Image (cartoon, rainbow, N blue to C red; front, side, top):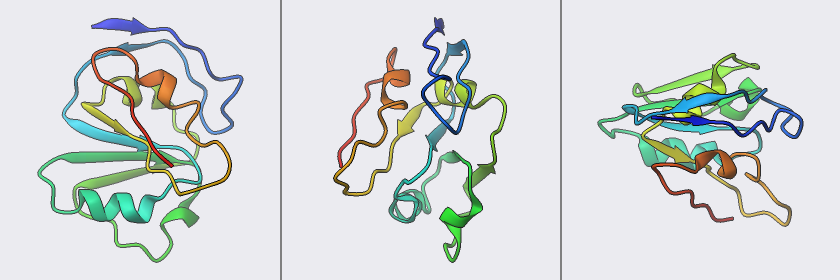
Length: 119
């Protein structure tokens, strides 16, 4: 395990990123605002893995069926940077957009896993 020392708290409006320790947990992590959570939930439904989503608003999940293997954390939860650093896989489920999304999350994904995204 190695320290994750990026401090992006000054850029991100949802979470205050602090030093964390990278590890390979047993869950998939997704977080942030303006994400394509509908497609993400469909993709992880019935997978044999735990999934943690951290986001500010419950509205993103209005009318969506949240699978049993998914835990959604709302608000500005403490420990989000550790959830990100400790995930086995980090997903940034982007909508097709004409503006940049995920630019704060992807730099946090360096280390033992590779960052990738499209949108």
